[in-house]
Image (cartoon, rainbow, N blue to C red; front, side):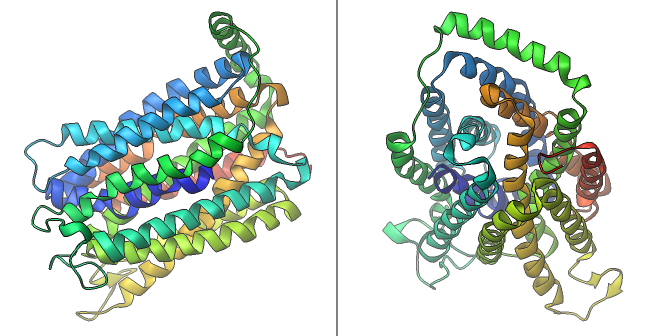
Length: 428
């Protein structure tokens, strides 16, 4: 239920609806919008990197995780709901970027605590399948929420939804209220569907008082960090995941922006692309859980990265007028078809990669310090999370070319794949 509730932030806001709306309508300049978006995601990544391991270590010593989840859920809801005020051609977008960043902090930090509960959800040999099923369930939620947006709310240039009708509730198409409803929809979706999680998922008992827990948690975290150089497998895995997950964030964060700027897709087209990608992710991730169970998380991660490198290379080669440097006839639909196919594969293997990475962290962690471990995992995912968005934004700004701006993603994937060589799993 956590994956189902939280996924729309990624699907609707980060990737397919709000991000391209922000760059194309709120800012009004795709290149400038992509640069601002990259800067904002980089700043948020630094905050996430500094906070995740500290919060996880403290939680392990205090005990209960539900209070933390409640607080970060509040940030998620407030940040996403506030995007309703993202008006077209705003004079200043600073407040919108701040609200979006608050929501991302809530989503990512809550994920640290939800992921740390994975070892308690089943037997060790079933965790890969359980993690894969959870991600698949999350993508299903993303698909349904995206369909709701496209059919009933998000308007195209003519002010019509995918059904060819005006948005529900008499929303004003001149000020893009239909598309702006993506923020409140994401907030309400999360608030409603987290209720079963908070009612039925068991929590730990309190172990120490808050003051003692903070001191013990910080001390424990420092000891863990000091021993990292002697733990080659854990260190290599944290470094590997640091780079390949950053690359994945770059792909998801800029996929919709890339389609809008390079191929000239509308919000509706990007939304359909999102449905295809999310459906591919749902199917692939569900099957990937069984593959993980059979060959182990390390091999599953390596396979996923290799596929993602190949697909990203194809995407960079796609243009409206050419493909791998070969000129295309005017009005050719080949770029649209190729990009749509790539979206399905990216979503699919991106989901498999994330599910197996969550399982792999269980292999590397100490059972009694699981939340601390996932905090370090969060740190690994965010310590360099500014690199992909920032370098995409920087290269885009320097070259004034969105296609070249995506090259850093391939490089980050390659670094992550190489570092995986030193990682061991319990399968040997």
